[in-house]
Amino acid sequence: MKIYRTPTGVNVHSDRRWHSVRDFSFDRLFREREPLRWLRERLTDGGREPRPGELPPPLESQEVWAAGVTYLRSREARMEESEREADVYDRVYDADRPELFFKATAPRVVGQGGEVRIRADSSWNVPEAELAVAVNSYGDIIGYSIGNDMSSRSIEGENPLYLPQAKIYDGSCALGPCLFLAEKPLPPSTKVYLQITRGESEVFSGCARLAQMKRTLQELVEHLYRECSFPNGCYLLTGTGIVPERGFTLASGDVIEINIEPIGTLSNRVA
Image 1: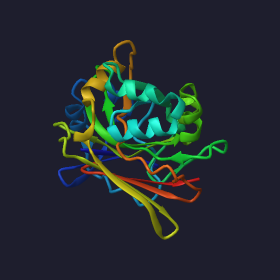
Image 2 (image 1 turned 120 degrees about the vertical axis):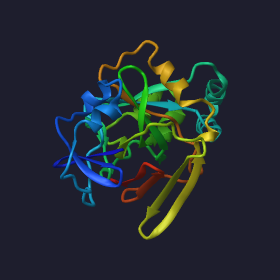
Image 3 (image 1 turned 90 degrees about the vertical axis):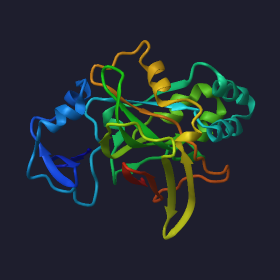
Image 4 (image 1 turned 180 degrees about the horizontal axis):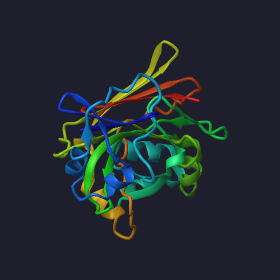
């Protein structure tokens, strides 16, 4: 099932049909032990496919967290940007404990078609195309979405302690276009595609597979939930295996497209 939040309500695509939902809230969904069953009981006729354009992100009060250095390419890029502290990222890649950090509250998240931002005080900015896992209040992965973890690499490269400033700011996170509730885990062969266009030209593209991740999704969730409670669940961005070369930086007006099937495509313009 794919759950789309629209300006006029929630629509669900299931079994090749569109449905509306009665008495729906994302917070209630994330509190359910069996979210698929709970949602099926509330489907009604009359739903419609969302119109092209901007969609709110598929969340309510869920926090968004993120994992770092989960792919080898991410480790290499972080070591490259932080020459004086490169061993920090080398060590965490092989450590028992993963890197986890807070990313955004709902007001700082934009959805499909919304504008992401780059910091005015950063000279090197990139998107990070990531699988987002939806985790209920019990710590169970109930579904998936697509995340863009915008990153100010020049700031983080100065000092690893600047990570919150490099990662957390208005418009620094995009999520969407929907929440894909799945009965089975996504296979390791699942691909994440990233394309960046500037004007009419493609300026970067890349692809990674979930099989390239150093850690499992459940391992990341288990560490996040060890000493943190999430009464209404959360989203966890699971890291990126696609990092543009050192000479590339985003510019205002760039369009970032991230595709993960069977979830869909998340597209955002840089403000």
